[in-house]
Amino acid sequence: MTTTPVPEAQLPATGIHRPAYGHFIGGRWADGASDERITLLNPADNSVLATVPSGTAADVEQAIDAAQRAFPSWAATSPSQRQAVLYELAQRLRKRAADFALLDTLNHGPTITETSGFFVPLAIEQFELFSGAAWMHTGSTRVSGERLGLVHREPLGVCAQIIPWNAPLLMFAAKVAPALAAGNTVVVKPSEIASLSVLAFLDEVSDVLPPGTVNVVNGYGPAVGEPLVTDPRVRKVAFTGSRATARTLIGYAAANIIPQTMELGGKSANIVCADADLDAAAEGAAMCVVANKGEFCLAGSRVFVHDEVLDEFLDKFTGVLGRIKVGDPTDRATGLGPLASRAQLKKVTGYLELGQAEGARLVCGGTVATVDGFASGNFVEPTVFADVDNTMRIAQEEIFGPVSTVQRWTDEDDLIARANASEYGLAGGVWTSDLRRAHRIAGRLDTGTVYINQYYNFMENMPIGGYKQSGFGREFSHEVLEHYTQTKAVIVNLREGPLGMFG
Image (cartoon, rainbow, N blue to C red; front, side):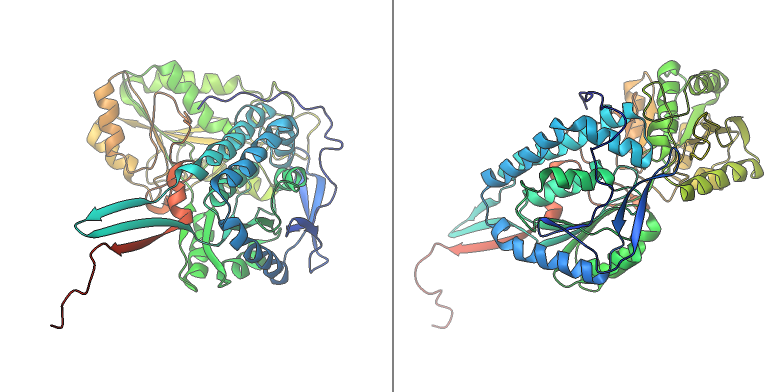
């Protein structure tokens, strides 16, 4: 994917967001049914950025009411009308891209270089991609003898969309854009940890969205998720997040037997062959450690390195990580910002202790990072464990932090067996100068995306999704429109008169 970095926002973030938000229901901000509020924090220093209401079932019901009222008219709009709305969303986001990049940096900790150079440009791209898709998602015709078959694609109705904290604005765009393009209306539940950019964006586009087409209910999962997904008026659920939450949501969805798309975790194999460009491979492995602080479901956090080049690779890998500055994510010199929350910091540091207890060799990092001026921040040093056995918990469980594990390999069949010996199957990487080997290994990996000779090599309109317990369904491409429509078959008899079945 080619992205154009957005210009730098003015610091501090005065005036680019409200100190308090409500729910967004029926095109307007609404107070919650409960007086309870949730604080959105800056993970660099754990200061308060804003507050949002803690949603209840009553708030969810109001949002679904609004989405249900809006659905018939939105479903009846022409492709040109839907295109105009989606394209204007992209333009509004582009106009204030620097502000929204800064909001994501402040609320969940990726560096300003990442949010301005990747996350916000990709969110803009999603709205642009699906603005055109409103025209392209057509039905088909089939002729057989004296029969004409018409296959229609129709919107589902009200869709529930539950998005994670590690890329809130991007996940909002990637879910809302195709749903609207297909003629659906949505109720979105953002994370209670990070939703500032989403809410500020709704402020920016409230005059563009027809009331009720997009609704947002803030709150905790159990209080909002269950009444949202079990309401009989909701016809689909899309979720990005953990396997544990997915299991719960799938159970909720079973109440009314509604379809789901689930994009879950990963523990992706990043394979370095003996003939690889080791400088490029080391850089790619380092990206998997620090990109979005390692809070990236696609991260290639299991690095398999051929025995012939293992020592050289480790030197280059740790050398790259050693040059990365840990610190203030609003500073463009910073390469690694804070983890998104105290809870995530506790989880990751627990794995740092576990890795050493399991017998892995700590090559670099392994501790909480000390950052001048940010003593209360959620910072962790980039960490690499070597001499890792594939059965160790640090090699099997998604850590979701700046931590990588390195295993050696010599035999390709054994490599593939170990790479596939995971409950996950979201992504993978292959580094080699042998094109045949690259395709051979990619074809044998049980995973939804394989990057060859460049990790995180995002390309426009390419599907992203998982095998196995990494979920099901595909997003970020036109394939997702199949998940937001249902098929109706209409068969026309072209022959006149009765069939003569009864004489």
